[in-house]
Image: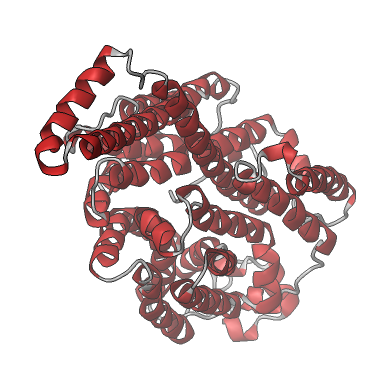
Length: 538
C-alpha cells in the first residue's frame, strides 16, 4: 500500500470507507472537546439517575402506598430493561445511524423521566422506569464509541480518563442531590431533574456530533428478532418471579408457577436459537473462551453484591436510624471518592502487578467493608458507615478494570463488541437479581426474627418484666395504669420489630460479604492476559 495522503471523507466511496481504515483519516468538523461535552451530558444524566433514586425509595414507597420490597421494583425494572437493550445496541446504531439513535435514546430517556415524575401509582412508575431503562441502555456504549472516534489516537487516553471521571463523579453527587431534592421538594424531582439536562444534551448532540463516513456507508445487517423476543421473555419472567415471589408465596401461587415455566422454557429455547442462528443476537459461542466465561460469572456475582449493598444501605439509614434522605445521601456519597482513588491507582498498578492479584485484593476489601456493614447497630456513629463505604468503592474499582481486562484480553478484536454486550448484560442482570434476593430475604427475615424474639415477650421473662415496669411506671401518672400498660406493650413490640429488622439487615450484609469472599477462588481460573482493554466503571 502506498503512503499517499489520505483522501477527504467526502470522496470516500462506501467500499473504500469500509476497507481503508477510515477511522484514521476522518476527523469531525466540531472541536472534539465540544463533542466530549455533548456525550458526557447524556452519560452523566444516565449514571446520575441510577444513584439518585436509591435514597428516595422510602419516600416513593410511602407516597404510592407500597411496601419497601415493592418499591425496589423501581430499581430492578430499570436494570432489566437496560440489560435487554444492550445486545441490540450495535445493530440499532447501524440501522438508524449513530447520531440519530443517540438523540432518540436521550429523548426516550427524558420523556420516560417525565412520566416517572408524574406517576400516580407504583405500576405506572415501574412501566415508566422500563421505558427509561430502554432509553438509557445504549447511552454509555454509544457515547464511548463517539468519543473514541472523535479524538486522535494520541489523545484518546486523556479523553477516556475524563469520561471515566465523569462516570464516577455522578455517584458522588447523585445520593446527596437526590436526598436534598426529596427532603426539600419531592421524590418526583429526582426524575424531573433529567429534563433540562436531557434537552441540553439533545441540542449539543445535534450541533456537534456527526456520523463518520464509514458509519453512514455501512448497512445494518439482519437482527435476530426471535432471539431478541426470547431474551425479553425469559429475562422478564425471571425478574417478575424474583420481584413478586415473596408477595405471592412463591410456588404456592399459580402466577409464579407459570412464570417459572415460561422463563425456563424461554431460556432453553433462547440458547438453542442463539447457537443455531447465522447472525445471533448474543453469540454464546464466545463463552467457550475460559477467561471470558469466568469473567462473565464474576461480573454477574459482582453486580448482585454491588447493587444489593447500595440498595440496602439507604433503606437501613432511613428506616432504622431515622436519617433524612439528605443525610442518607451525604453518608453514602463518599463511596464515589473511594472509586476515584481506585481508578487512579489501578492504571499504575495494572502494569506492575498481576491482574488476578488486584482482583483478589479488591474482593477482600469489598468483602471486609461489606462485613463492616454487618456490624452496625441502632446507635452507630456516621463514621462507622462512611469509612466502609469509601473502602467499598475502592475495592470495586480494583475489581472492575482488571476483571474486564482479563475477561476480554484473550478475545479477538472482532469479538469485542459482542463480548461487551454480554458482559454488561450480565452485570445488570446480576444487579437486578441481587436486589430482588436481598429485599426478599429482608422481608422474610424480619418476619422470622420477629417471631423468634417475640418468644421472649412473656410475663415469665425477666428482661421483659423490667422493660414493662419501667415504661408503664413512667407513663402511669399521665395515662393511668391500664392505659400505661397497653402503651408499654406497644412500645416493647415496636422495639422488638426494630431489633428483628436490624438482625435481618446484618444477616443480609454478611451474606453479601461471604459471597465476595467466595468469588476469590474463581479468580485463579483466569489465564494471564495482556492489558489491552480499557473500560469505564459504572
